[in-house]
Length: 324
Image 1 (cartoon, rainbow, N blue to C red):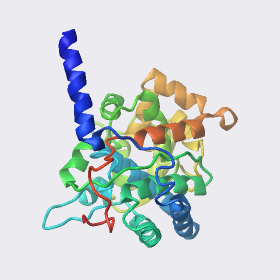
Image 2 (tube, one colour):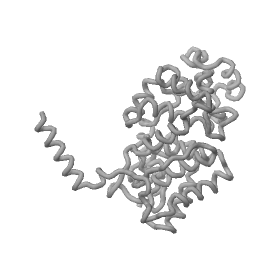
Image 3 (tube, one colour):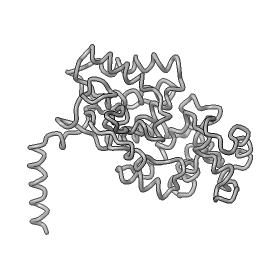
Image 4 (cartoon, one colour):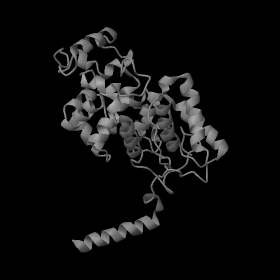
């Protein structure tokens, strides 16, 4: 057994030597020599759009999530469908994504500054960070050096993205399969402190929780009453705030809402069904003792390393919506 493990190790090392792409990682300052102004250009571009439409921050953050959870952080969520093949962008969970123009504008500016150098997946990771910071959220150092994937398949998004209907066991499995732990799960769920959602993402909790025309007993009944005023049964167009009164600001109010059983989604309510995630939710209710901003940055860095393509793998797209 020891001999087998040693041989396996030697084979892996040889593979790394032959295929450099599989052994390199992302790093802070990756473009220091090849495109030193990359972060300033992306931030300036992101600020230009967020200053005019602050609600773009949430979909930019969500876009980075959705990219990393499907095939890794390779920019595949940015690709358009080609030759009759539907891409991740066309999957139902991604059809409400917005902000692609921000990524395209940043890419265009970078192609003028340092053509063929900066990947679309890196631009997306930076824009997500900058969007959060621009609405009073935390900031973090983004490791760079991702390359862009060439594959984007609609069914991959349907299979791999967490849903607002997931229970804790499903969420833990989904996150765990990507190397994210339970703390990452509850921290990254805090991204729901910004943004809006369509009624159909949670309406079963209001009208037909178990298929008997009942309401979800795990949701505050007064909150259900208020939501029913906005969301009628069968409504597929109306959108509501995920964090009422604070949906444009990145803060800890999401955890206060969850602690009061007012999390909008079943996946939010699921955080109270596990002792570890419940303890974290309750610990963040007092903003003065909160560790959320620090924790969020750490979990975003970790998420941003999922399945990255580096070295000679993938490509550096000229246009983010199209393969070279």
